[in-house]
Amino acid sequence: MNVRTPGFKYPKLLLSSALILALSTLSTAGMASADRLGQDLTPVGAERAGNADGTIPAWDGGLPSSNDRYSNPFADEQPLFVITAANAAEYSAQLSPGQLAMFQRYPDSFRMPVYPTHRTAAMPQKIYDAASHNAANTRLTDDGNGLVNFQEALAFPVPDTGLEVIWNHLTRYRGGSLERTFVQVPVQANGSFTPVRINEKMAFPNYLKSTGEDRTDNILFYFVQEVTAPARLTGNILLVHETLNQITQPRQAWTYNAGQRRVRLAPNIAYDAPGTATDGQRTTDNLDLFNGAPDRYNWELVGKKEMYIPYNSFKLADRSLKYSDILHTGHLNPEHTRYELHRVWHVEATLKEGQRHIYGKRSFYIDEDTWQVAVVDHYDGRGELWRVGEAHHFQYRDVDVPWYVAETLYDLQSGRYLVGSLTNEEGIGFDFTQRFDYADFTPQAIRRMGR
Image 1 (cartoon, rainbow, N blue to C red):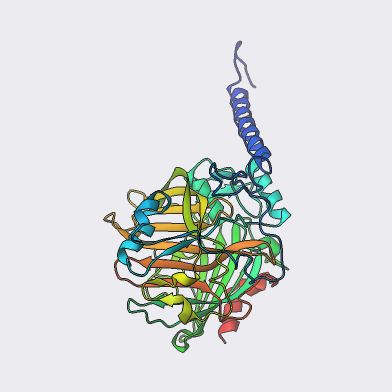
Image 2 (image 1 turned 30 degrees about the horizontal axis):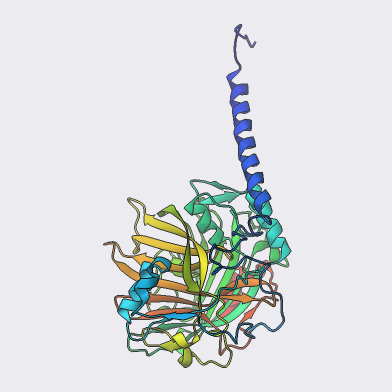
């Protein structure tokens, strides 16, 4: 029998009320953030207005769609100025320490041609709708290592923390489903290189034609990668089921080894394990500038700033260029690069005490319009600047997808560098029309591919 003492205040009811009030406050704040999208903010959370001096224009909807993917809409433009080692100090406030270090490392050859800024980022309406939903509903869980109430893309269009900003990069829109053939090129200090040709298939769960019985809501995307050249690497295949929360359910990965003709689990395809076919010049979580679980770092939101970043890289995507035209000793050929002034989010990741990684600190600069990492500086365990990453933005306007046409990772110490995502000699390059079945992303599938 339940006996209630007079004056009893029902603590369970009070706790429930407090919880409801807290949740209501969060929901109200989220709705207020969502209401800003499409108003003073763009549909994905960037500042709609330009800057005070007019060097960054207002966002007006992005680059209009066109079936002519690779034609350069800015072909007639000339650089406003060129940053070199001689004048880099004048622009230091708009450059990262790593970019400044590139001028010191290559004073006679590295330069940054700066063009007028164009805010070309555009995405489908369904992505804007998902961003609005996420602004009102998505929350971090498990100490920031997972998401709840998340839909499709752009988890936190109005972020409050550095971790939320990096989650936007991880969950940004990349077309939903695609197949691409590209080259990844380790360039030696003397400028010599051998391209590694790679075929990749990638699909987010809601773009699959059919799903598997073991599908969970914790899958971010499925990914399979096959090396097709040079001959010594041909036939090695990597399969990844990328999970949202990699602490409760680690990334699932398998490899097919052409020599052994066997599929094996690959639990170490994460963090600072060497990247596939990179000659040791990239960690696994350097792919796409950053990917995977964020749990080994503390993430600090430093703020927003204006910065010169690679953007609208139509010259670099020119189909008439050969890889030998693009890849020079020490860095990309500046004749084909384009930099613009854009607003970026600055996030610093510092290795947690007791954790291990070859990078002790990473400074990320993330474009406000696309949520892509544009520049990242990597520091070793001694605090010395080591590698500088730059991603050369491109608007795939036939499908309204902002992504990269090149990812570079410069080793300031060795003079080597790595370039990924080049497609100049690869025909269509990125094919966003492909649709796959869940069965295409299973260990059995990569075994069949190997045979």
